[in-house]
Image (cartoon, rainbow, N blue to C red; front, side, top):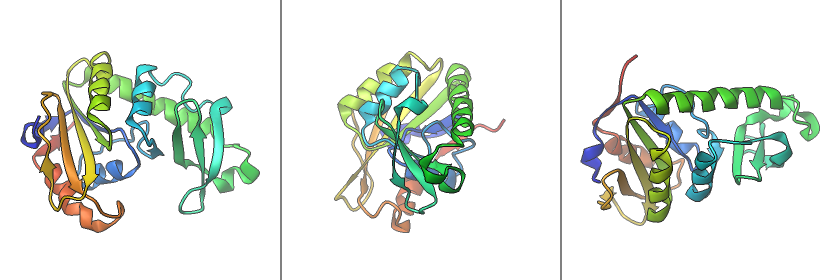
Length: 211
């Protein structure tokens, strides 16, 4: 599937990680109208996200599975890992509300998470066309993601996989699967504004259906 085939109108565009950069760039390009389940989390491996989706978020971020890994980059929130799925919540548990690592605001966090999970399933069941976007992953992981989503999504959907490389422009990988588009993006510090033009080019012609 090539980049040009992604163009058109979608009911929703979801970020599937691996960090919050995808969510930020979706918002910058007018493609993010709500918060997804793992928008602000770190998921180093697509295989872990696949497992989370396959299990339909069962036991996700339950208190018994959580371990504090330290403060986030701002020093204001605890980074908390779900050891069952190896996914880290980065910005959901402010240190000022959870003194000494006692997760006193956990119930609020879990309630917010359940609302996002419910919305995910609602969009999956009712959307006529959805786009799932992921930073980093392998062809095999993307194929498995498509297989899992096929059992969850009622309408049409596509997967956009972005992989950083030593290239100097966006490269369309033209993978043979008709539902998976893979592109290579020039490698930079991921928070550097130098990448913005590539994201803008990547999302050109992609729009969100107005309610």
